[in-house]
Amino acid sequence: MSAARQPVPAPLFRIGEVAKLTGLTTRTLRYWEELGLLRPTDHRSGGERLYAGEAITRAARIRDLQELLGFSLAEARIVVETDDVDVLDRVRTEFTSGTPTPARQRALLDEAIVANDQLLARLDDTLARIEAFRTERAEKGERLRVRRADLGDAPARRAPERAATRSTTRTTARSTTRTITRSSDRKGAAQQ
Amino acid sequence: MSAARQPVPAPLFRIGEVAKLTGLTTRTLRYWEELGLLRPTDHRSGGERLYAGEAITRAARIRDLQELLGFSLAEARIVVETDDVDVLDRVRTEFTSGTPTPARQRALLDEAIVANDQLLARLDDTLARIEAFRTERAEKGERLRVRRADLGDAPARRAPERAATRSTTRTTARSTTRTITRSSDRKGAAQQ
DNA sequence: TGGTATGTTGACGTGTACGTAAAGAAAGCA
DNA sequence: TGCTTTCTTTACGTACACGTCAACATACCA
Image 1 (tube, chains in turn cyan, purple, red, blue):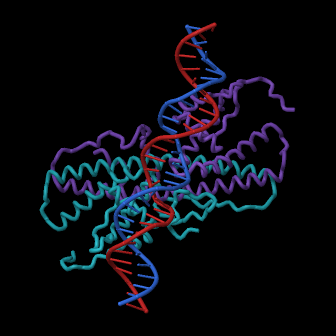
Image 2: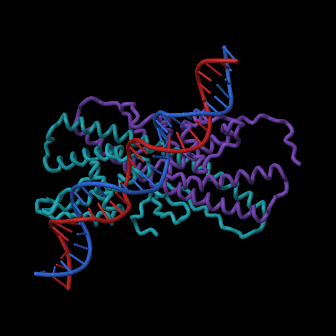
Image 3: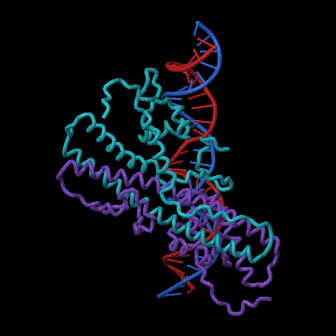
């Protein structure tokens, strides 16, 4: 709707800022760049990296792929590359009403669709497995609690019962648990 | 004392059999033992490891913790150790009606309960994150499909059956997942 | 009884995903 | 302008989770 003709200063971030915003380290950002996962949109005269805001969401996606699905960075690259297709495609269409390469564009889109579907399937599979695991654990918790009740008195601990139906609600519940924390979680954020 | 009257041959497995049943390698099984995650129930005269059937389910749990939650083996050990408590506890109660150490047993149970609750919270957190990710991806899939439709004709492609990563034949894609249905997602949209 | 398969304990190798200096250049600020 | 940060590249180090021989002992089966 708005004509973005003017040099609206798109916010660019230095690598340290990106690191803070994403919770990653600068080393990680450079490493990911080295592997072709996350490229800065620009470099300054001095060679300094400058990232667009989009890079931050992209970084978050990569982290999700890593942590949630156990993807290697090589695998994650494939996924985010199809994102590139998507973005490029959208950008192109915004700038030029006519499609630049019709057949080519269709091919790229098809590719992206397939990749996305595969990812979705993978997500569903993982979700199903985790839910099964969760059910098992919930039952185990029940059993444990019954046993403890059978043992009688002792400090009456409250039963959490927190999670009821976590559907679309994005429980921002930062795991306050400190006993079991992932070692793979980098020390990046304000934890600790 | 308690009479283990009949030498009912509890099925014991050699390490190679366990490997086949679990899909792990013998190296992995020995490594896990080295870290205290999975101990054979017995050794034969020759020093050969013998595993009970329980070890197989335990191995599966450890794998789940690894793959589904990204636990390190050290973290996984903590979890399965509380399982030990559970099992030991149950076994004891089965064999001797009287609780062997009342206070101690309560403490162990409480510990196990807390650990289990923490794990549950972690599972819920991960589930929520994956579901959010899934929603995002489903929407992206919608957008991609719309774009492709806008491009008109072209061969109506079917989604290739190829799995992205290794085996993963378990792509049962049985959507037991709570359908997040914001709009019209549900993974069924895939595959034409 | 012997051959083959399977097991055992080292011990070194490997890939991934970074961490951690080091040495110097550029940016930001008073 | 000078000082302090932040950045750059280069390079070696590291932790985890195994893989992969090697040399040898034991188990199973005809």
